[in-house]
Each structure stands twice: as structure tokens, then as C-alpha cells.
Length: 372
Image 1 (cartoon, rainbow, N blue to C red):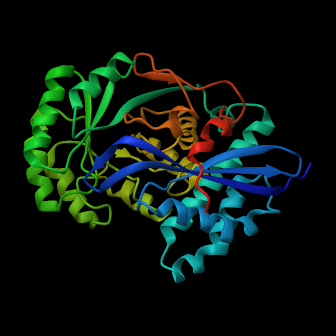
Image 2: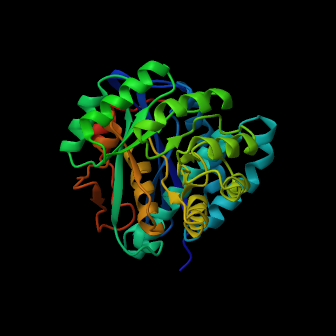
Image 3: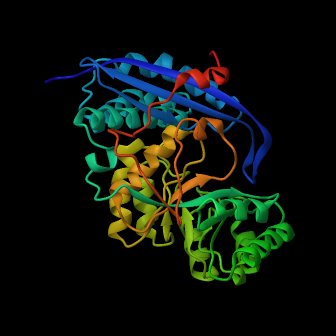
């Protein structure tokens, strides 16, 4: 039976937080999220989430793009063909995105719609999304992300008590403090603990060589985005050859060609697309296949609300491999209220409910709704 997309709805939310989330790339002073719901002509529906952390007014802008540009385009498309929906939206908005210089926000809106299409398709099939995508298990290995620059040991120990066994520290803001924080984590968690570090593109290639050399003796599991994502491949390759710490990146790559080039370049050991920034499930699924074929780790980036986190976890479960799901250690009611889960010995198990297994309760989220 043919089923077309009949309606698209969105909710822009912004939750206050007591302490800003700090990173070298910028500060998140509130927790935004843009949730999307598609409804098909047969009554099936699905949810997705658009990445919208930066800049501070970016969430409102993406919400307006979705309603003004994408809502008229998506209605009437085949709800059973998520890849075709994504391809159609990309084709119909390609020149407009170029004209206004906004390929990133356009890709992010399409990514959220793509997630919703896949959730809808799996719900209609009556199976969890990871199974609908061909996965063998709903178990996902996780790590606690976003530690630092303050109270890193206290946060890590609390997360370890909550079941986490891998942790990621923010660096790139102050060299002495970066090393002190990593040393304190290593002392507190032990010599065998899995500790990643993330500089959020903070350093020039020359600075990265120096900074990583200072941190490498403390045994980081990977070094994420030490330099800008658009630095030439030669700069990334030289860094990979000289630092002796596995490099990770991908959240700021956009498009199949960019991921293919990074994978073929051989300088990344960990590849981290973001299902809300580019590609959605459709694009990131293809990246996952290529990453795992090359023997690399597929570890999607996510640092926003609960719908996108669920989508990332289902994608990892479907892909298999040795990857981790990123779980923000900072408080976020738009994650915790929407997608609660338990971690045991570094793993979580996705629900058996159809689709993402998430049905947001909009009533407790009402205080966070922003009208645009």
C-alpha cells in the first residue's frame, strides 16, 4: 500500500541550565533542541531531531528553515523510502543552499527529517530501528562525554558509579589545565581506564603537535579534532604520523565525498558523523559501512536532545563494529526526559519497541517550547 507523508510538525525547545557547557569552540548557555514529527497518510508517524547547538540563535533559524522551505517539499513524498526522501530534499534545495551560503543548516534540517522517516518506517514494520536496519543486537557500548574543564574528577567518578567505563575530556582551552585535568583523571580512574580527549578544532597544526606531545604520555584512547576539520589532508596525515595517538573526527564533515576522502586518507582511526548535522540515518549508515570495512571505529557524535541520541544508538547497533555512542555528561532535560536509559558496565540496551523506541511526552516539555 502506498503511503505518503501527509504532515510535518516541529517543536523548538530551549531548556535553561545552571552551568554553561564549555568547549574550545564555544559555550552552550541553554540546551536547545528541534524535534520533528512526520505523519503519513496511513497514520504512521516518526520522530527526528535537528542539530542546533551553535550559534545561540541557530535553533530558531533552523526551525524557520524547516517550516518555510522544507515543509512544503516533504508533503506528498513516499514515506516508505527514507533514502529517496533525503535525496529529493537535497536535490530540490541544493542551489538555494549555495545561493544563501547555508549548506550546513540545510543539511541539518534534512538530517532530522531523514531520522523521522526511518523511525516511521521501522514503526510501520513493527520492529526496533536497529533491527529494521539489519542489526544483530540492540546492545550499544557508550562513553561519558563533555567532561571539563571544571570538576572533571567528580563528574567522572559519578559517571563511573552510574555504569560508564569510558570518558572523554574537553581540552584546548589552556595547555597547563588540559594536562592537569587529564593527569587527575588518569590518577582517579586508573592506568587502564579508557579516556578520550577532544580539542574541538582548537589548535593550529603546529600547536597540535606540541599539545598532543604533552598529553600523549597520559595514554589518551583517541585525540578528537585537534585541528580544524577543513585543514588540508596533508596536515592531518602529518599529525597522524607524528603524534602516536589515534585521531578522531567527523562531526564537522559534510557529504559523501568528504567522508570518503578522510577514510581513504588513512589519518583517522575513529570516524564520527553526526546524524543531526549531515546525512541522517541514510547518509551515516553508508559512512558506517565504509568505516567498518576499513577496520576503523565508527563512533557517531551527538551532544543534544534525546531523539538524536536514540537515533545515534540505533545506528551504532545496526552497524556493529567496535564503536561507542557518545553520551553527554552534562545535565540536559531535553535528553533525560525524552530518552531515559540505564548503563551497566559500559553498555546500554535499546528498547524492543518499534522504531526509535521513543515517544516524547510533550506535556512536561511544554515549559521549554519556544515560539518562532
